[in-house]
Image (tube, rainbow, N blue to C red; front, side, top):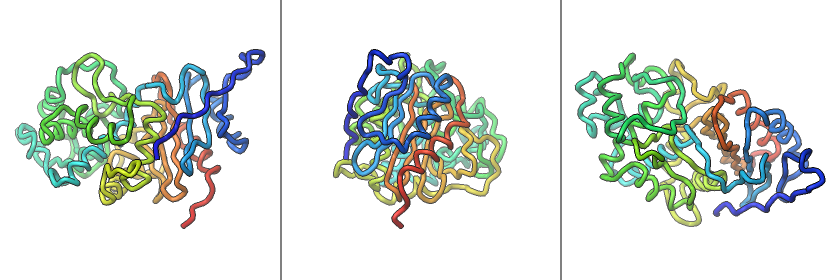
Length: 342
């Protein structure tokens, strides 16, 4: 079921200064703790919208500015990694690649620089052994002309510091390598493959990975989306790969995305810093039912497959790290969603 537009927040002119926040008609008073958390973090967040969805409808909305709505496009940074993993799995479903294929099968030059054992699974789980900058930054301008140029630089100029699959180091390297692999397999640019296989089937009309400056596509941190769009993507995952009756991913692919990978490895760079979380394919696993892909800068998408709800916080300008907010928001929203039926 597609996420439907939320009712517009009513404005009260006499109280315009005091009513910075507004709730939709779906919102309920038991979300007061969520309201308070967002209010306390207003200065850090800037303009934001927070949505929660359950049972086919919105149950909560809060936004700090009437002009920044659930339809407004904003950078989502590392939250795009979840979508990249889903795109990979469309090719796995078709038998065109395997998660355990070595990257050199598609990009032979990696073998020249002692990187011949890196697999696609390693790239999706930040266990390639190739070091980049810690974390995944949102880049508005690329210094490379193409994804091929960018990934070739990883092969030739970035050191491999440990064997693949022996430590977790959260960075931009893996997702961008995967993006280039998909271009080779799919014979199309990464953003076009994403459009055809994930964005269009999930009706994410305002979502894109295309670079604004015409440079290399940044699969790890260059996505832009809206709160409405990203909810559609999570609804597809919650529905075991179907969206509005159309199969986007197989049930097996969705299960693999949500399966902990290399869970016992030492962690050298944690990314968004979700305490106690394990890592699946492109996303974090909080427990057996709760999955998230925050970027650490104010974009927090997550869903619970047992209680069947999804929620997202998205900010207009993700500029400062906001790690302490992530788990508090997830916990407070989860408390209002009832217990698991299982």
